[in-house]
Length: 113
Length: 114
Image (cartoon, rainbow over all chains, first blue to last red; front, side, top):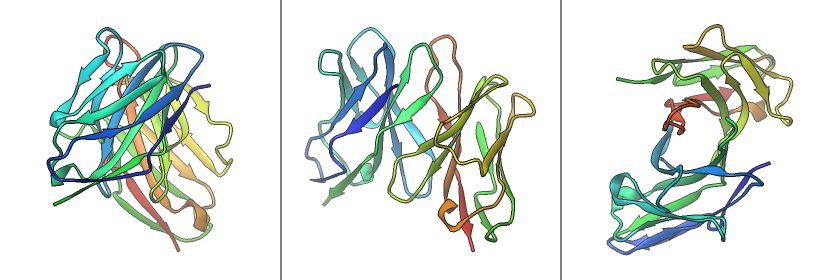
Protein backbone atom coordinates (compact mmCIF):
# COMPACT_ATOMS: atom_id res chain seq x y z
CA UNK A 1 0.00 0.00 0.00
CA UNK A 2 1.15 3.51 -0.71
CA UNK A 3 1.33 6.36 1.79
CA UNK A 4 2.42 9.98 1.89
CA UNK A 5 3.90 11.99 4.75
CA UNK A 6 4.11 15.74 4.70
CA UNK A 7 6.62 16.70 7.31
CA UNK A 8 5.35 20.18 8.15
CA UNK A 9 1.73 20.94 8.96
CA UNK A 10 2.29 24.70 8.89
CA UNK A 11 4.94 26.82 7.21
CA UNK A 12 4.93 30.58 7.82
CA UNK A 13 7.22 32.69 5.65
CA UNK A 14 7.69 36.31 4.72
CA UNK A 15 6.86 37.60 1.28
CA UNK A 16 9.67 37.19 -1.29
CA UNK A 17 11.42 34.57 0.84
CA UNK A 18 12.14 31.09 -0.53
CA UNK A 19 10.09 28.16 0.69
CA UNK A 20 10.32 24.38 0.70
CA UNK A 21 7.42 22.08 1.55
CA UNK A 22 8.54 18.57 2.31
CA UNK A 23 6.93 15.33 1.17
CA UNK A 24 8.03 11.72 1.63
CA UNK A 25 6.23 8.72 0.23
CA UNK A 26 6.20 5.00 0.78
CA UNK A 27 5.40 2.38 -1.83
CA UNK A 28 6.69 -1.03 -2.80
CA UNK A 29 6.25 -0.27 -6.50
CA UNK A 30 6.92 2.63 -8.81
CA UNK A 31 4.72 5.68 -8.40
CA UNK A 32 3.59 8.91 -9.92
CA UNK A 33 3.80 11.97 -7.67
CA UNK A 34 1.77 15.14 -7.57
CA UNK A 35 1.47 18.43 -5.73
CA UNK A 36 -1.91 20.12 -5.45
CA UNK A 37 -2.94 23.48 -4.02
CA UNK A 38 -6.24 24.21 -2.32
CA UNK A 39 -7.66 27.65 -1.59
CA UNK A 40 -10.45 28.00 1.01
CA UNK A 41 -13.73 26.38 0.00
CA UNK A 42 -12.33 25.29 -3.34
CA UNK A 43 -11.38 22.03 -4.98
CA UNK A 44 -7.78 21.01 -5.55
CA UNK A 45 -5.70 22.38 -8.39
CA UNK A 46 -2.68 20.60 -9.82
CA UNK A 47 0.62 22.44 -9.36
CA UNK A 48 2.93 19.87 -10.94
CA UNK A 49 3.50 16.17 -11.46
CA UNK A 50 6.32 13.68 -11.78
CA UNK A 51 5.67 10.76 -14.10
CA UNK A 52 9.14 9.83 -15.37
CA UNK A 53 12.28 11.34 -16.84
CA UNK A 54 13.90 14.45 -15.40
CA UNK A 55 13.72 14.47 -11.63
CA UNK A 56 13.25 18.24 -11.51
CA UNK A 57 9.77 19.23 -12.58
CA UNK A 58 8.39 22.70 -13.02
CA UNK A 59 4.81 23.67 -12.42
CA UNK A 60 2.50 26.62 -12.40
CA UNK A 61 2.94 29.80 -10.36
CA UNK A 62 6.73 29.44 -10.24
CA UNK A 63 6.76 26.21 -8.21
CA UNK A 64 9.10 23.32 -8.84
CA UNK A 65 9.73 19.96 -7.20
CA UNK A 66 12.50 17.42 -7.20
CA UNK A 67 11.95 13.68 -7.17
CA UNK A 68 14.54 11.77 -5.16
CA UNK A 69 14.04 8.04 -5.49
CA UNK A 70 16.72 7.02 -2.99
CA UNK A 71 15.21 9.25 -0.31
CA UNK A 72 11.62 8.62 -1.48
CA UNK A 73 11.00 12.35 -1.40
CA UNK A 74 9.26 14.89 -3.59
CA UNK A 75 9.83 18.31 -2.02
CA UNK A 76 8.13 21.41 -3.39
CA UNK A 77 10.04 24.67 -3.70
CA UNK A 78 9.55 28.25 -4.75
CA UNK A 79 12.42 30.78 -4.78
CA UNK A 80 10.26 33.80 -3.91
CA UNK A 81 6.74 33.57 -2.53
CA UNK A 82 3.87 36.02 -2.80
CA UNK A 83 0.99 36.77 -0.49
CA UNK A 84 -1.27 35.03 -3.00
CA UNK A 85 0.59 31.73 -2.44
CA UNK A 86 -1.08 31.44 0.96
CA UNK A 87 -3.02 28.17 0.72
CA UNK A 88 -3.02 24.50 1.70
CA UNK A 89 -0.65 22.30 -0.27
CA UNK A 90 -1.11 18.56 -0.68
CA UNK A 91 1.34 15.97 -1.90
CA UNK A 92 -0.21 12.89 -3.53
CA UNK A 93 0.94 9.54 -4.86
CA UNK A 94 -0.47 7.03 -7.30
CA UNK A 95 1.07 3.68 -8.12
CA UNK A 96 1.89 3.40 -11.81
CA UNK A 97 -0.05 0.14 -12.06
CA UNK A 98 -3.14 1.39 -10.27
CA UNK A 99 -5.77 4.10 -10.09
CA UNK A 100 -5.87 4.83 -6.36
CA UNK A 101 -4.72 8.38 -5.51
CA UNK A 102 -3.60 8.99 -1.93
CA UNK A 103 -2.96 12.36 -0.30
CA UNK A 104 -0.70 13.52 2.47
CA UNK A 105 -2.03 15.48 5.43
CA UNK A 106 -1.33 18.83 3.86
CA UNK A 107 0.87 21.82 4.64
CA UNK A 108 -0.63 25.22 5.31
CA UNK A 109 1.62 27.82 3.75
CA UNK A 110 1.09 31.31 5.13
CA UNK A 111 2.92 34.17 3.47
CA UNK A 112 3.19 37.27 5.63
CA UNK A 113 3.97 40.81 4.41
CA UNK B 1 -15.42 25.63 -19.20
CA UNK B 2 -15.89 23.68 -15.97
CA UNK B 3 -14.79 20.12 -16.57
CA UNK B 4 -15.78 18.44 -13.30
CA UNK B 5 -19.02 19.82 -11.95
CA UNK B 6 -20.41 19.12 -8.53
CA UNK B 7 -23.92 19.95 -7.51
CA UNK B 8 -24.91 21.48 -5.29
CA UNK B 9 -22.00 23.56 -3.91
CA UNK B 10 -23.68 23.67 -0.50
CA UNK B 11 -26.10 21.09 0.88
CA UNK B 12 -27.90 21.14 4.19
CA UNK B 13 -29.56 17.92 5.28
CA UNK B 14 -31.27 16.70 8.39
CA UNK B 15 -29.78 14.12 10.68
CA UNK B 16 -30.73 10.70 9.34
CA UNK B 17 -32.29 11.96 6.12
CA UNK B 18 -30.79 10.41 2.97
CA UNK B 19 -28.89 12.78 0.74
CA UNK B 20 -27.33 12.47 -2.72
CA UNK B 21 -24.44 14.48 -4.07
CA UNK B 22 -23.78 14.54 -7.78
CA UNK B 23 -20.75 14.87 -9.99
CA UNK B 24 -20.52 15.14 -13.75
CA UNK B 25 -17.56 15.41 -16.08
CA UNK B 26 -16.98 16.51 -19.65
CA UNK B 27 -13.49 14.97 -19.88
CA UNK B 28 -14.52 11.41 -20.75
CA UNK B 29 -12.16 10.12 -18.07
CA UNK B 30 -12.50 6.51 -17.06
CA UNK B 31 -11.73 6.98 -13.36
CA UNK B 32 -13.94 8.91 -10.94
CA UNK B 33 -13.17 9.43 -7.26
CA UNK B 34 -15.09 10.56 -4.20
CA UNK B 35 -13.16 12.10 -1.34
CA UNK B 36 -14.32 13.32 2.05
CA UNK B 37 -12.42 16.28 3.47
CA UNK B 38 -12.99 17.54 6.98
CA UNK B 39 -11.76 20.88 8.18
CA UNK B 40 -7.97 21.26 7.98
CA UNK B 41 -7.51 17.62 7.01
CA UNK B 42 -6.36 15.76 3.93
CA UNK B 43 -8.89 14.48 1.42
CA UNK B 44 -9.81 10.94 2.41
CA UNK B 45 -10.62 8.55 -0.41
CA UNK B 46 -14.03 6.94 0.08
CA UNK B 47 -14.18 4.95 -3.17
CA UNK B 48 -13.47 5.20 -6.84
CA UNK B 49 -14.64 3.76 -10.12
CA UNK B 50 -12.26 2.50 -12.75
CA UNK B 51 -14.66 2.32 -15.68
CA UNK B 52 -17.52 0.30 -14.20
CA UNK B 53 -15.40 -1.39 -11.56
CA UNK B 54 -16.21 -0.10 -8.10
CA UNK B 55 -13.32 0.12 -5.61
CA UNK B 56 -14.35 0.68 -2.03
CA UNK B 57 -11.85 1.71 0.62
CA UNK B 58 -11.74 -0.73 3.52
CA UNK B 59 -12.57 1.93 6.10
CA UNK B 60 -15.43 3.60 4.23
CA UNK B 61 -18.60 3.26 6.33
CA UNK B 62 -21.50 1.28 4.89
CA UNK B 63 -23.54 4.46 5.22
CA UNK B 64 -21.79 5.72 2.08
CA UNK B 65 -22.74 4.32 -1.30
CA UNK B 66 -21.98 5.32 -4.86
CA UNK B 67 -23.47 4.91 -8.30
CA UNK B 68 -22.00 5.50 -11.71
CA UNK B 69 -24.74 5.08 -14.32
CA UNK B 70 -22.51 6.15 -17.20
CA UNK B 71 -19.05 7.59 -17.91
CA UNK B 72 -20.12 11.18 -17.27
CA UNK B 73 -21.97 10.94 -13.98
CA UNK B 74 -21.22 9.67 -10.51
CA UNK B 75 -23.31 9.98 -7.35
CA UNK B 76 -22.53 9.79 -3.67
CA UNK B 77 -25.40 8.58 -1.51
CA UNK B 78 -25.34 8.98 2.25
CA UNK B 79 -28.10 6.79 3.58
CA UNK B 80 -28.39 8.17 7.11
CA UNK B 81 -26.19 11.21 7.62
CA UNK B 82 -24.81 11.78 11.06
CA UNK B 83 -23.27 14.92 12.50
CA UNK B 84 -19.85 13.40 11.86
CA UNK B 85 -20.53 13.27 8.14
CA UNK B 86 -20.49 17.03 7.83
CA UNK B 87 -17.59 17.76 5.52
CA UNK B 88 -16.52 18.89 2.08
CA UNK B 89 -17.04 16.16 -0.50
CA UNK B 90 -14.76 16.28 -3.49
CA UNK B 91 -15.26 14.53 -6.80
CA UNK B 92 -12.31 14.00 -9.12
CA UNK B 93 -11.59 12.29 -12.42
CA UNK B 94 -8.52 10.94 -14.10
CA UNK B 95 -7.56 8.93 -17.13
CA UNK B 96 -5.42 5.86 -16.84
CA UNK B 97 -3.82 6.08 -20.25
CA UNK B 98 -1.31 8.11 -22.18
CA UNK B 99 0.56 10.77 -20.25
CA UNK B 100 -2.41 12.16 -18.39
CA UNK B 101 -2.46 10.70 -14.91
CA UNK B 102 -3.37 13.59 -12.68
CA UNK B 103 -6.78 13.99 -11.11
CA UNK B 104 -9.05 16.88 -11.98
CA UNK B 105 -11.20 18.09 -9.13
CA UNK B 106 -14.58 19.69 -8.92
CA UNK B 107 -15.27 22.64 -6.64
CA UNK B 108 -16.66 20.38 -3.96
CA UNK B 109 -19.96 20.13 -2.10
CA UNK B 110 -19.99 21.32 1.48
CA UNK B 111 -22.42 19.18 3.44
CA UNK B 112 -23.97 20.44 6.66
CA UNK B 113 -25.97 18.08 8.85
CA UNK B 114 -28.49 19.65 11.21
